[in-house]
Amino acid sequence: MERMISGRVWLACVSLFFTLQVCLASVSVKVTPTVDVIIGETARLPCSYSTTGAMAVVQWFIESAGTRKRVAFRSSTGVGLDKDTPLTDRVTMETDMTLVISPVKVMDERSFFCQVDGGPVGTSEAETKLMVFFAPEKPVVSENTQIIPLTPNNPVAHKVGKCTSNNGHPEPRIIWFKDSKPLPEVTDPKEKIYMVPSVVKESSGLFTVTSTLYIQPEKIDAKSVFHCTAEYSMPNGDIKKENSEPFNLTLLYPAENVFFKLLNTSQIKEGDDVQMKCETDGNPQPQFEFTKDGRTLASGTGLFILRNVTRSDSGTYTCEAQDFDADNVELTKTLTITVHHLDPVSVVPASPLMIKKGDQAELQCKTRSSDEYTLSWMKDGKQLLQKGVLTLLSANLGDAGEYVCVALVPSVPGLRKQANITVIVSGSPEIGEPMPGKVEKQGSMVTLRCSAQGYPAPQFVWKPSGKVSLDVNGNTFTSTVTLEATAAVIKDGVTCEVTNMHGADSKKIMVEIQSDNTVEQDNGVKGRHLTLLSVLFYSLSGLCLLHTL
Image (cartoon, rainbow, N blue to C red):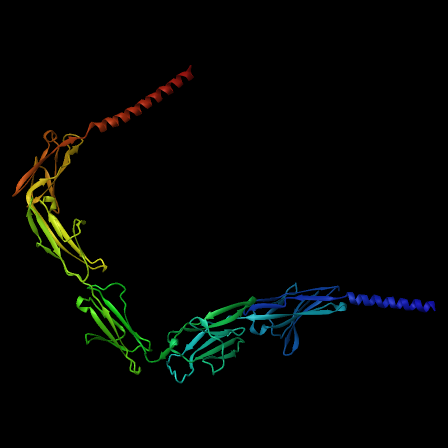
């Protein structure tokens, strides 16, 4: 009896041992659940495993036509690639069991199975899904170029355009936009706005999607801008968009109102070009007729331009829109413009005005304007006073010259006129204070200048004389002489004499030899340099003597 019990215990232990061996023996496989790749590029499907067995065979499978088909395998003896599969000549298997596909095609989007056979310890597998992507072409819109009539009493949906996005994977999504705002994706033809979508799978496996937009147009749609967007997916969850070119609709509806405005942004003055714009709220814009005081000025488009206007162009202008589709609506508007003006400036007395030295003269300038204006007198670019009457008391030769009377309208930028008058002051000439001449030494050449005013123009005489030239600047005459600085010239100077019919004037211009101060200063500098050199020399001599001793 005891032997029977012992035998049963032994059998139970053996059975438990083998059961534990089977339970402890296992194979586990790990893959990437999803791999994204762009068509034409390389896909890498990693596979790793662990096993308690000594050896294992790794095989990659796909599902084709409802059955599994192996495409590659690797064992301790090497790697094998199966023939007559959708991946033939495009697949390899690396030493780390990664399946490499290059180039990737559309048909490669499927499930792949990495199976590990561990022999006596069992078999296990894991599934990875390959997702393929391809960016579609830029969407193209075939827009409705016909004129669409508005029928408010009987609204009808019209085809706006057809948007096409070619060769994408997976299917792109088409979104319609109106004035940069997305339209709701509606497919019910009973709605005011709806779309008719379509998808075609090309022989390449890529998708071409289209969407045709229909709307019941309203007036505001005449200025609306439409476009479509192709939204598509790319690897790693990246969503991208491509926009079509924008387009508009051509709607037909009668005008209800007319608008007439002035395009000039500043006040109008004589000589300006004036632009007036007339338009309606209808579409397309009709022809327009522009009139003033019952006289037709122009017919045609809504832009009316008056060139080089004068004060007579001031008044009220009428624009009439000739829209024959508008019933019982008066399509006229008026616009009043004012042309600001400033008359030419008149100066009394007439130019040129000749007065004698010491006399009094009064210059008056006058004008007229549509607005308040100012008058001012200027001479040599400087303002003399801000009024229209300029009085010259006891005129002198310096008062001769050109005077300018400037009239301007401060409230109208650019409205400005002016008139000139030349004043001639006759009298005996006057010489300005001359500058003395300087030479380095006797016998050198010296150049002297003598300036005088007077009318008639004075005649110059130099004593002693030399090479003479004359320069005229307005009412100032300048004579220049170049001569030798003789002992007599240095002693007595040179005399400049001027004469005209009214009298004469003269000035003596001295000629100086350049001061010895400059020479002394130079000698002083040289002396200081020599002194320093002497000190340095004696110092060095002393050092040499000490060294010798």
